[in-house]
Image (spheres, helix red, strand yellow):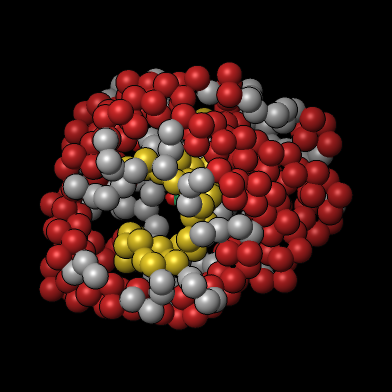
Length: 318
Ligand code: CP3
C-alpha cells in the first residue's frame, strides 16, 4: 500500500530532500525503496515503489504529490478541452519504471514483484476534484450530469492504466494490482453502470498476460462480485467485512486479499495477534488468501510490529 515505506527510518533517510514524484522517476531510488520492506520484514512479495499518478505525470499532466495531502492537480479536468490534454501512454514515457522493474526482478530472485496502476474511477476523482476529496461531489456530478464526457474520460484513463500495467508485466512484474481506492464512495448500481465497464477494459485484456490480477478498493464490500467480474483473479477487501463473508460475496473459487485494519498495528500485541489469527482463520473459507492490510500502513506504525505480524502469519501457514 502507498505508505508502506513511511514507517521505516531507512525510507525517510533515503527520501530526505527528494520530492515524491522525483523519487518515483529515479530508477536507483525506486529499486532501493521497493527492496527495503522486503529486506526488513521478509514479506512474500514486493510492491513497486511508484504512485497511481505516475503515468499521468509521464504524459504531461501537471500533478504534484503534496506531503500529508496526496496528489494535487494544477488544472482539474471538467470539460472536453481538459480531456484532450490526456494522451495515450507508451513504454517510452516511463523508462525509469522499466529500468527499475528489471533491476528489481534480478535483485528479488524468487520473491515476486507486484506492479500496479490506479483504476479509472480513482484517477478520475483526483483529476476532476483537483485533489483528494471526501465526498467526491464534483466527480459524481460529472458522472451523472455529463455521462458522455464521463465515459470518454474513463475510457481514456483505462487505456493509460492498461498500458502502464502492460509495461510493468513486460519488464518482469509477476502480478499486477489495480487500485480503485475510492470506488467505495459509489452505490452498487452506479459502480456497475459508470465504472465497471472501464475497469474491465483495463483487466480483461490482460487475462492472457500470464500474471495474476488483483483488484482492490476501500469500502467496496457491496460489490466485490462486480470487482471480480471486471477481470480479477484476486479481490482485495478492507477491514469492514470479514474475509469469509468477502469470499462468499466474491463467489465460487474466490481468492481474496486482506484485511487487517492498519490502525490496529498501533494497538497492544495481544489485540493484534487475536485479529491476525481471526483473519487467517476466516481467509480459509476462500480458495486462496493473500494476507495483508485492509489499506495503507499508517506513518506512526512501529516497523517492529509489522515484522512480528509477518512472522505470525508465516507460522500459521496452511
Ligand atoms: O507503499 C509503497 O511504497 C507502495 C507504492 C505505492 C505508493 N502509492 C507510494 C506512495 C502505491 C501502491 C501507491 C498507490 C496509491 N497512491 C494509491 C492506491 C492505494 C491506496 O493506498 O489506496 C492512492 C490512492 C495513491 C495516491 C496517494 N499518493 C496518496 C493518497 C498519498 C498519501 C499522501 C500523504 O502524505 O498522506 C500518496 C503519497 C505516497 N505514495 C507516498 C508513498 C510512499 C507517501 C509519500 C511520502 O510522504 O513519503
